[in-house]
Image (tube, rainbow, N blue to C red; front, side):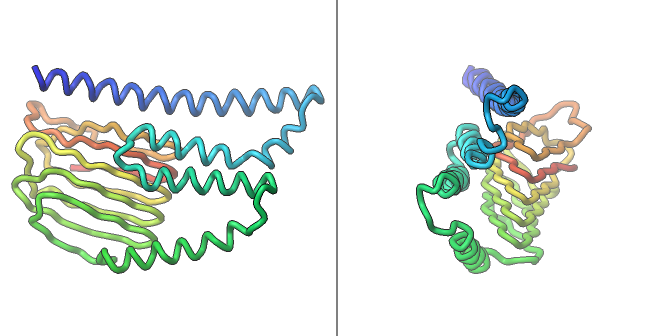
Length: 234
């Protein structure tokens, strides 16, 4: 009974994510079309509107990413803050140069990444959980645990390769993924079923074409793929 309820909830989340994506893309197309129509009628200077309010698209992407997976809130919130700051600068409400602030933030993120992650290195682990973050770097990791419980993967302007071919799960495991201008590649055993509820915004999620005949183990994927790519292979 509980399994059925959980599956129904997961299906509802997946449907919600798909609807959010469709509404976002469809709404953007309608707004752009309406803007050019009003400009052709000399009612609105649409190019000036775009020039002033284009950061609203960044804010909307951050909000969409946050709503799809609230547990992975830090990067979506960062995107929204960046969009709000750019909007204030575009409207001349604030006068500082946002681009001069961006590079120090990137450098801080790079420093944190180098401290807490081994870069460009193949690393084997028997840990039951996965916690990897790559920013402007690459991570290659293999897990051979017999009781994989899931974890989280973040790739921002970087790449993460995870090999779970020799790993096993008792029944279900969940990986939260956030890929922004980066890529995540995960290799799984042939008897795992893949349940993807990743929200892709100007990005792609590629799943294995073959499916197990009698799957007893399921890997659930959650998160957001923004201008990036996620590939799951057997």
